[in-house]
Structure formats: structure tokens, C-alpha cells
Image (tube, rainbow, N blue to C red):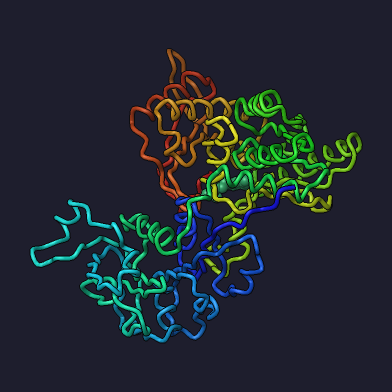
Length: 548
Ligand code: XMP
């Protein structure tokens, strides 16, 4: 069995900024591995993981002031490790203070939002730290806007958000950049310790990516080796080591996460993997057929399809409360899955492992000190993830260290069909929470047909990937219409389409009137039970993405 190579890594210490995750993602987008860890993590703890070849640290921003009684600090061993450190905002102030500098408390004045920094000229002995800005120039357009005749130095637009500021540098540090209101906007020393008062990770700092790249490649001397091929090879080695010759079951949901998890595991252990797909009857049009075609026929992965439509429909008769629907569907799912796993075990011998498509954001959430990210869930989500505890499976979680966009990239590298790779998320309880009121076969049929039309038209318009999620909702409202010579009394369907980054907040998508017109015409013309279509123009918050 091959052993794992040590992996170059940048560790991001999380001081609670809303952008901490984004820093980790930016680093990974540059194909360098990065982990986000709680601020209190010590160097000794990090060094226990001997697969990590730590190349540098980033101290994130955060809401605290270094003068707060409970202000989080940094393990001094990290700052003494000799490895480069990039402090961002709070991270810069903390680093300056812990290394013997001084931070001036905010005097009621906070610098927040767009700002312009002016890069200073490096003296020969300062050149090392100026590498953070190497090759970075204001674009001609920015130069026109930002410079005036008196400015000799490059000026860059950046995104600021801070109260306190460094007013005395630690020994050996010098100033790299200033702003009009803050003489210390960026600092550094010859050992590769850099402090930035602004946020290079956000898109409002246009040269931010280049600045992060400079830290990774010029200061930390990283290589861009965190590529999908590399991630897959590593996962394969780990899965083989974990599973040995035992069997693994994996519930496929039709979504991208479970599909990629299954493909990775299959690559590692072949037919020791058995996939289970439960047709709850609450799925979108064609979903079951697509799973069979892709996994069973095309990829030739052992696949068990369970037709549980009747079981789910029976449990849902007359249930209108959304939370009850979720609980019933969740419990029924577990019960079907358990039945199937037991059946498989009796036919094929013991099954020791259950695969789950847990992603890195879930892992961070469960370890983060950050209260915002542990915000309690508003709906009781049911995922294929929340499976039989009492069955005592050991878990295989090959996506644990991956963000969603990385999962998609890896899915593509594993030949998952493109429209699957980019598929919008679909809730575990399926169409049941898109039928307002009681669920029955007839209403499911109407909604399935409506959903298909909405998605087809959005795909045809070429905007499917820009949209975070799009779907139809079958409302309990019936209204009067007129078709041909006759009066109708039929259902109202709502169309929902949102743009979003993380699904925690979302904006309603500005679909063109022409596209909305086409969707509406097709819904009413092709589905006799629908005679009225409305478009949902609420953002989240205050609304949620789903209607139930
Ligand atoms: P909301 O409606 O809470 O949705 O704004 C946010 C995201 O979560 C999905 N969602 C669910 N996913 N089980 C799931 O697995 C659920 O019960 C559930 N409810 C909502 C929703 O589709 C969106 O992507």
C-alpha cells in the first residue's frame, strides 16, 4: 500500500471574521492546501498531523479588539516558528502586539468599506517583505481614478474593515503601505511576517488574489500541487487504508456530493462499494432513471434501487405541517435504508462502513468557536447524511476536507456527467416541501411536470449555472381563469429562482421578462391543472429559499 506524501499547507487561524473561510478557499483556488482551524489551536497540535508540511500561517480578521478582555490570541510558538505569517486586520494587530508593537484603540472612528492604499518604495533591506506586493500595479483605469499629479507611488483600491490600528511597529518591521487616514496600512519584516490592515481575500480588493498568491508562492515558497488529480490519488490511498477488504454502502441522493463520494470510493475499492438509491416518490422528473443510467449502466457500480414510493406516500397522507413532513420523511428514509442494508448484509456478508458526503464547511462548523457559523438551523434538515446511528457503521467521508466547488471539480475529473456536476441542490425531503399543504400522487405529478419546465427553460436560456437554485412551488391557491371559451378553476404555481453563494442568504434572480413569459406560457399550456403563475421576488432573509 502506498504511503501518503506530506502535503504542503497553509494554516488559517480563525479569529471569527465572516471572511475566514474565504481566505482558505482563495488559497485552495491557487492549488495550495489550506485548513481553517480555531484561533486557540497550538503549534504542537498542528504538528501532530505529520501529513502536513506547514509552509505558513494566516491570522484572519475578527470582530474583537486586541484590548477586549477575552480577545483571542495566537500561540506564541506559531509566531516563533520561523515560518511566514500573514496577519489580516485583527490578525495584523494581534501579531504586532504579540511581537512587541503597540495598537492604538479606535477612537470611535472605524474605517469600513472601500479605501485606497499607497505602496511605499522599498529600501534594499526591505525588499524581502515588499514581495507581498511584487508585480502588483494599479490598472490604468484605477491609476486614472486614484492617482493625482503628486502621487509617485502605486495606489490600489482595497476593502477595509477595522477599528484599532497599529501605531508602533515591532522591532525589525517597516511600513509597506499607507492610506490617507491610516499611516500603517501594511507592514512586514525580512522573515516573511506581513500585516495587512485590509482584506485581500474579498473581491472588493481587486488585486487581492495576486497579493495572496505572492504570500503563497514568493514568501512561503509553496508549489501549486493541490490539484483534483492529487486530491483523488490521496483520497484513494486513504480509503484503501481505512476500509481494507471490507464492504461499504453509500446512499445516492441524486445530488453531486453523494455521487462524487461514491465515485471516489469506487475508484479506491471497486465493487466492495454498494450504492443504494431510494426512490421516495418525492424526486424530480427522470431522476431515478438518471441514477440507474449513470451509476448502474455507465459506471457499472453495484447499485440497489429501492422503490419506496408507496411507503412514503402512505406516511404523508393528510400531513400539512412542514416540520412534520420533514420528520416523517427523515425517519422513513432511515427505516428504508436500514431494511436494505440488513438485506444486503444477509445476502453478501457484513457491511462495516457507511459513506457520507460530508463537506468541509460542516466540519468547520462543528469545530469553530465562531458563534455566527454555528447559528442554529431554522429548519430540521434531513439529508441522506443523517443515517442509522444504531447500525454502528464506521464512516467513510472522502469529501470531509473539500469545499463544494472542489467537489464539483473532482466530480468532473472522475467523469461525472457535466449536468450532474453542476446540478442545483435539492432538499432531502424533495418535492414534499414544495407542495404547500398535503402531498398526494396527483399533486406530485403536477409539480414534477412544472419543475421540469422551469429547469428546461432556465437551461435553454443559458443561465442555469448562474442561478443557485430554481424550482416551482405548487400552492394550495386555486383561482379562476379562462381558456378558449371555457372558464377554469385551477392551481397557482409559484416560480422561485435565486442567486446565492452559500444558501444562507440569497437574492431573487432577475430573470428576463421574456424568460418568465416563456416559463409561464409553457406551464399553463402544457399542464392543464395550472392556470396561474407568479414569480417570487423575496430575498433571504426575510424569506427562506424553500417555501416550507
Ligand atoms: P432555506 O429554505 O432554508 O434553504 O433557505 C436553504 C438550502 O437548504 C435546502 N433545504 C433543505 N435541504 N433538507 C435538505 O437536505 C431540508 O429539509 C431542507 N430545507 C431546505 C434548500 O433547498 C436550500 O438549498
